[in-house]
Length: 110
Image (tube, rainbow, N blue to C red; front, side, top):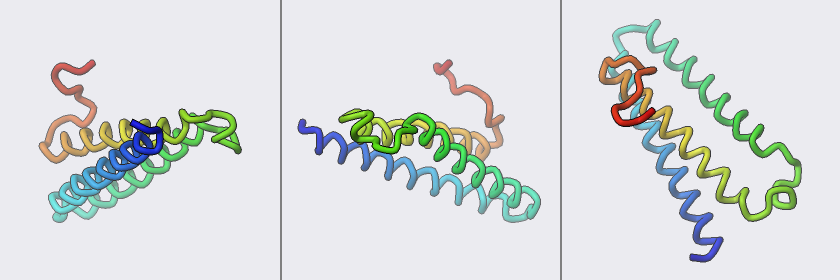
């Protein structure tokens, strides 16, 4: 597989992970519709998480000239890390949706 194809796949995975995150988030918002305080706090937490994710990714790749500094790793590494973080957040929201402790580890994962 060519590097451009791998980058395309990594970008598609990141996009799909974002779509799933948004779907679960909207479902959780709908579930909390009766509680304005819960809705506000969830929105605040999600905005803070998105800011954290983006800042964390920038910290992982701080160079101004990313292509020169990181070479072929950056175009695939950035979306892969974004995907992993987004899937983890989606799992947290899904546990909240199921009224489980969002910090609880999934079975079989440490």
